[in-house]
Amino acid sequence: MGSKNKLKRFNENLTFNNVLQPTRGEVISGEFELKGNWNKNFFKNNNPIVLELGCGKGEYTVALAKMNPNKNYIGIDIKGARFWRGAKTALEENRNNVAFLRTQIELIDYCFAENEVAEIWITFPDPQIKYKRTKHRMTNSEFLKRYKKILQPNGVMHLKTDSEFMHGYTLGLLHGEGHEVEYANHNIYRNEGAPEEVTGIQTFYESQYLEQNKPITYIRFKISKH
Image 1 (cartoon, rainbow, N blue to C red):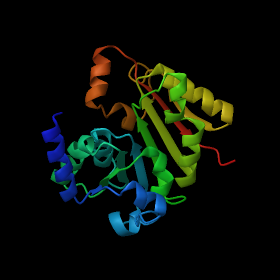
Image 2: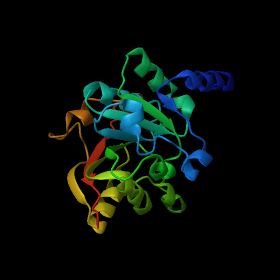
Image 3: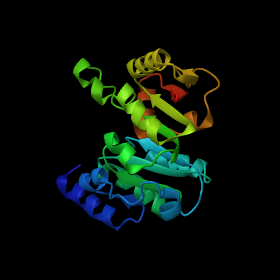
Image 4: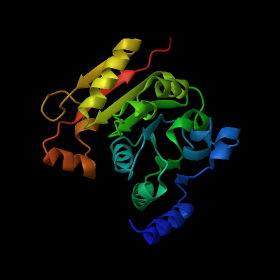
């Protein structure tokens, strides 16, 4: 994407009422007013809030919102020029249950209050295979602690990935730390039983992975509150 095109998208994002772009300073200082008030002040309903972390172009966020109109979806990514597409589509389709938040995933617990979130989706994250990159792996222990802070007691996590490494790493960590794995599938299109939200939505990159015969994996789990 050229810098001119990127700038155009950044400027357009500023006009979208479904895009929130607080500064890092605002978020860390506690000045981000939607924390604890997403339902009341943004969505203006009491429907469950679902996050997609590292939402990219926002395809999954918008598709989930279309599938479940009685839930509120927030796609989160630091790259606003990417989720411009999802934000624009949501506005064009008049989807009032979609928002996009431009921030870093490690600041998630500064953006949402305790028990504010019902579900979290992590779709096709960078597996960060090199050992020195493990601190950026989105299902590591530190990230799970952040998610636990904002999830409701019965909150659900979803991991959908084309990385068998990420799938295996996460399963091992979950079992090792005593979290509850509700469902795990290392090839959702080959094995029966994967939910519609998992097999019924395909992002652009996912369809490319499938053309290369890469298996798509999925885990649904709950983070233990101990």
